[in-house]
Image (cartoon, rainbow, N blue to C red; front, side):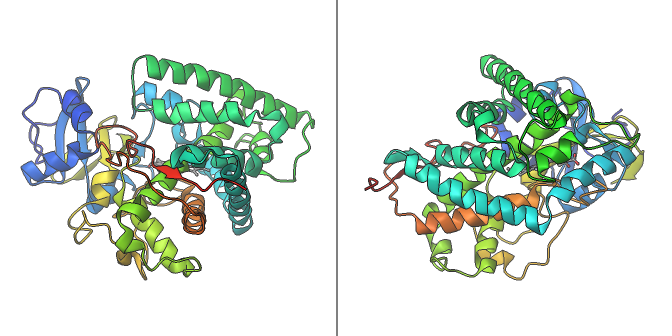
Length: 417
Ligand code: HEM
């Protein structure tokens, strides 16, 4: 319920769906700048919602137990992204227990293994690539092979080409409606059927797996009652590892874009640059470029903020992109400047490209360190690769969700001997 005594201003428009669709990543920032506040009330698809941005808003949003993710994003996006039964739809103890399973995969050994697989798969994808290739395609292919191998799934049972197309379709279709979305839903069904088959094969001990590989951890995971996950839920969680690893290809494309367009900020990054310098560059890519626009929550525990009473069930959308560009949190927020991350101590609320707050007690992305590690390796690989950048459309439309340079970042590679 939007209370009339609220100090959070309400927009005059009856419904803001069209404006959100037209303005995409910039919708919240524009409105907040117009009204001089970090939160406002409006309607989306005629449903009342509060949009918020900025570190103070994120701190409220990420208080443990305060919000659920259930019924908080459009069903169309949920079906292609986290899906029903996944960790993101859980709350309380059940969530913490399932989330711990994901966090256990992200220890130093697991991350190191992922990076060395990616290094080898990048090289292999580069050898297979035509001389003119879109970085986005190259990275998607290398990352699909990486995701399958890291999870522990044998490539001869995985049909990597088909999986690349299916996982990519889920990512591309999440922000759309109509035929593109329907096609992605069909491809998701096919991927789920395959993933269920993999889970069942692991449980029947039919796959030659390394101990404790992520696919086995999911297949053999027990919930709080001691029961295995239903095969369809385990399949959803397996896809929740594969799909976002493939989605890192977008960030890799932004890395290529940044190395080229912000070349002055990359001058010091010659091959062999210290990890801290490469990591600062990667963090600035995650801050500056548009990826996950916002996260939705429904109030579980009522609270007050900015003189507004948030009641159980109220719908809130937290602007991730706008928070990463908030003028109070970032000096010259619209300038691409990796130096701002030199010696940076971390901030769970002002820098939230993959969510904020705690990992176990909240819904913050468990794949954040893996994402950073893969991007650091991508910077190193791109710096070591000989390529030129032909004339192309490198603009990034801020109303296309998820965003990407128009051309997908085309590179010319030297012919392989
Ligand atoms: C490609 C870059 C990525 C981006 C931009 C991203 C972004 C996000 C965001 C915004 C959330 C929701 C946070 C919230 O609800 O508060 C999330 C959750 C999640 N992400 Fe990522 N992510 C990425 C990569 C990954 C990777 C590599 C993995 C796993 C290998 C992963 C697995 C997950 C899972 C399982 C959740 C649900 C967590 C929960 O509900 O507790 N993501 N991610």
